[in-house]
Length: 163
Image 1 (spheres, rainbow, N blue to C red):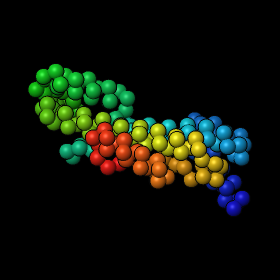
Image 2 (image 1 turned 45 degrees about the vertical axis):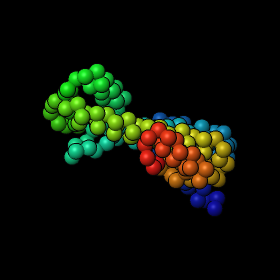
Image 3 (image 1 turned 135 degrees about the horizontal axis):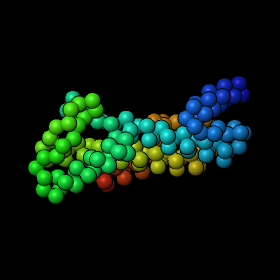
Image 4 (image 1 turned 180 degrees about the vertical axis):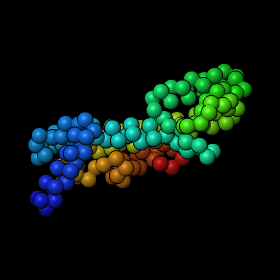
């Protein structure tokens, strides 16, 4: 078991360094490991959000700039515009009808909300996990039952359906 932990820690440590995260100096110090994994999860969450969504045969990245632009154009639609200019990744800008852009803005918002909510729950998991459990916490990991149930309830209450 010890060799596997050391091997896993060194691989994870290299990954962390490549992401600009300072790996724990002591992989046996639970607070150092928690902080490094929390940072890793935050970066992975951001990457998942920025990866964006596919809709209508096109891909839409969701960097912070993209999210700001989508929300600005969505505000214009909510104020009564019948169409707004926007573009999918690598495509020419075109006019989106209000209904089409509303669907895009809602899908983008749901995507961001789902990932932020998941990240929040993973951070709660990190906060309570011991050293051995922390080794298995990565972005995309299945949440413990109580956290998964809470996340599903929040998404359902927010009108997002199943998690």
